[in-house]
Length: 375
Image (cartoon, rainbow, N blue to C red; front, side):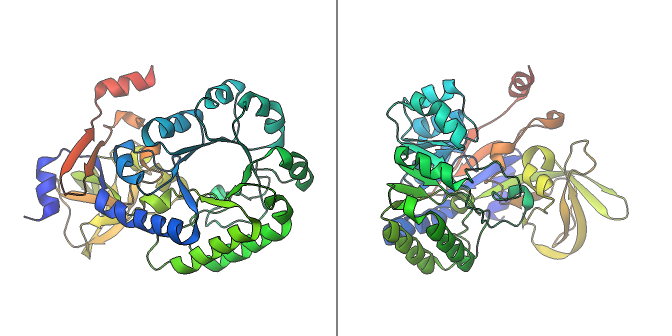
């Protein structure tokens, strides 16, 4: 009996499985960047908020960054370290709450800064800047897309507010694995905004930098960040989300039925609409970690009523039948934070494989959770 089969025999699917050993690989690279380049990293909670593994992650990251009051509070309460609070739009009430614990409050626009900076009290203030350059495989996720609302674009407004800022945030990447593209964009930022950066204490380069991907030139990345920081005399921050959690999570499912309509269609006890929504949004195919590749062609589908609730079409090593286990990879970043109760499909439990190999079920969801979520 394989390890995966043994686990499946004792666990009730569906469940998200977080593996701390796989997570550790990413975290060690993040620490290496900190030690070599001097760049601090704060976990992007918009991507991953699984606080059951925060005790491990806080050993390697400097804190958290958020996109809302609730995320900021979660980071403060469960992660510790630095708490960076950013939102596309704050309310005054939220800023008043943030001033009690946030280490930095970052505004998205000049108008929000002018309206709410006073409410932040003595908290260090930041401003998001849209540099007009970006990297993204998808227009939906491109921070500098046409008519983007994300960050200040008016150079004169930035210069006017600069004396009141401790730092700025340039979040302009999405899954950027191209170091030379980043180098060119940082040169652009230095040329256009260098006089402002030279007067600030810190600059965040945001997330979307895939520097933990296998084969990424980490040494070159470190050299680039160090040179940028020294050129402007600033503390550089990174906001890894996917880079911190990539490869560390799976959605473990069981086949409930197999129907045939031109192709075999295996229906599992989970749903792409409810449990891996990003694939549906971006029209991408989920990656399977088990079974492995082989000659048996099958479409893998979810159990919701949505006609397009399909994970993808695969050629697998075994012919799927009811009771078979199917593992779907990369099920941590931008998946667990987006899970929902569509169709009342049971919510996957959350299971952690600790560093010592032991399994811990940290959360189960039941009917009461579903009922309370809708009224």
